[in-house]
Amino acid sequence: MLDRVFAIALNTYRESLRARILIGLTVVAFAVAFYSIIVGAFTLRQSARVVSDLGVASISLFGLAVAIIIGATSLQRELEQKTLFPILARPIRRGEYLIGKYLGTLLTIAVFVFADTGLLLLITAGIGGRSLELTIGVGVAIVVALAVGAWRVPSLRTYGFIPWSIVLLVVGIALAGVAPVERRVLLVGGALALLEVGIVAAWATFFSSFSTPFLSALFTVGMLVIGRNADNLMRLPKKFFPAFLVDGGKLLSKLVPNLQIYVPARPLLTGEVSDVNLGMYLGWAGVNAVAWGVGLLAVSAFIFRRRDFL
Image (cartoon, rainbow, N blue to C red; front, side):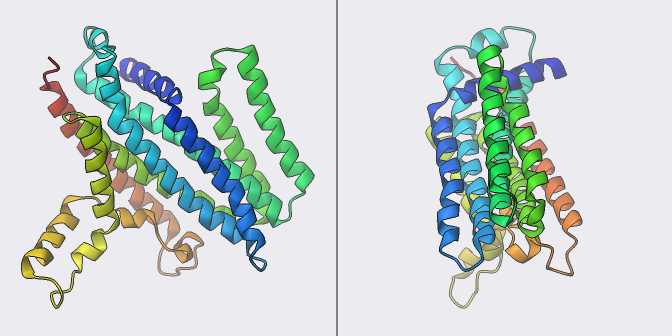
């Protein structure tokens, strides 16, 4: 079972890299990372903070966009190209196929988040006092290594981005030690963004198991908006809203995951909130994300097994 799911996941990752929209979002995300340097230049000794705050926001925003687009369109694209039928004709269950698609989407997003976070950490290192020659030289060397490897080994043109993004992240973590607070903000914010993206991708997979790409993306965005406002929906003031809206808001806040826990205030990311253990917070957020992901995938597999493609 695992080898079949793994094969589907790698195929989904490979197909996702060919999508022009993914390339465009990646270029824009990297451009925003460099743009943060310009914005930080207009602040008074707060350049590193601007880079980390704007960087965390961009990781979350573009990661969610990638999850919604890939999750909502990947399955339908295989149906339109009729590549799904020969796959399901083999000894593979529909549930295994759907799980593989989801894991492939997560792998694609993880590579994106690792690379973007690594780039932001390198920028933070340069602003925080690390030698610019060293920072730029290491960054260029990593890019050149990927280019040379892709030129020499064709398979690295697709799968080389996986180890490359990890190396970029690890090097960024090491060099950004000169700015420990901003490094923590980027790492914790990036981890929370990846967990949130996992939930949103599970919603996109769920909707795509029975709906069209447009409706799947629309429904997923709706779940995202509701999830980001779950706490507000729970506390709608009865003074300004009728009773049915107050009750409806409480019901919605319980039916969807509370995504506000994945976009906490900066003091929590820096560890300044004394009554919150950051490790426990991350652990609970991870358990919540896994629970929602597993539950949504189970329901998606149940629906997908009964879907008629004809």
